[in-house]
Amino acid sequence: MMTKIAIGGDHAGYEYKGIIIDLLENMDKEVKDFGAYSSDSVDYPDFAHPVSSAVEEGEFDLGVLICGSANGVAITANKHAGIRAAICWNTELAALARQHNNANIVCLPARFIESELAKEIVKTFLDTEFKGGRHERRVSKINC
Image (cartoon, rainbow, N blue to C red):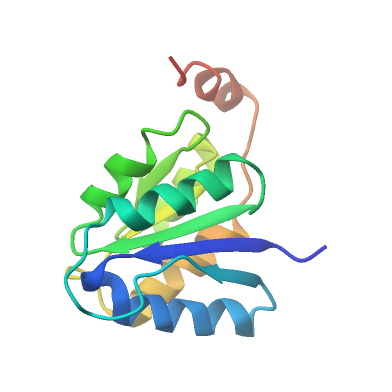
């Protein structure tokens, strides 16, 4: 079964979004682009909410959100009860987000990492499985 990935970001993430979409399609992932569709200034919640809803409702397996710092999209995404969005600026954080936190959205800070690193972070995020065990107990305590 093909992994389905929802992706979105604001104007600061627009360039990286295209790069990540190419990567995902080359990895044979099904991808839906929730915007933004240009580098014109936009509001990050307008893209973070639809991506988060799509993952939360099970339409997509995982999500990728990109903005300048990753803070705005992560804060927005984590307002959704079924979302565990993690800001990742290196591959170790991406692996830990999946292994220990069962993160379902990776948030990339486009203004602080190079595009090649962004691709490696996404690959690591997708290739890493949740460990379960003691981590399951902790993850189950996240929702209010």
